[in-house]
Amino acid sequence: MFENFSHHQSLHQQNEQHDEYRRGHEHIAKNLADLMRSGKEISDADVQFWIGKHYEFILQFWTPNRIAYKSLALTYVMDPAFKATYEAFEPGLAKYIQTAINIWADANLQ
Image (cartoon, rainbow, N blue to C red; front, side, top):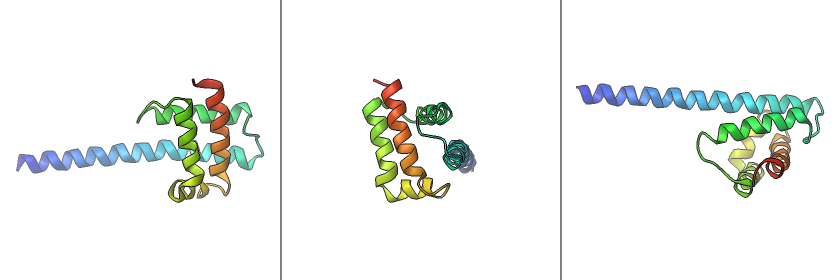
């Protein structure tokens, strides 16, 4: 009986954590999509600010160096699932983020 309760409580906590991650990611993607729609260049300080927020989000899971972060960004345009996630916010967003990450990573990571 107690094992079942503990198991359900753990699943509930995992679901809450998943929802928190999803909301955090959506907040970043939405802001980047808004900037893209408004015509902001990828090198614009506002765009680079949100890429910094994206990197901070990624740090919850691992700590990529410059090459690894740029490689992750490449998957956003190469992997259909990643691409679809970003394209759902705005067509072209995956490439926009990938290019912006390249600039941010070159300026901020070793």
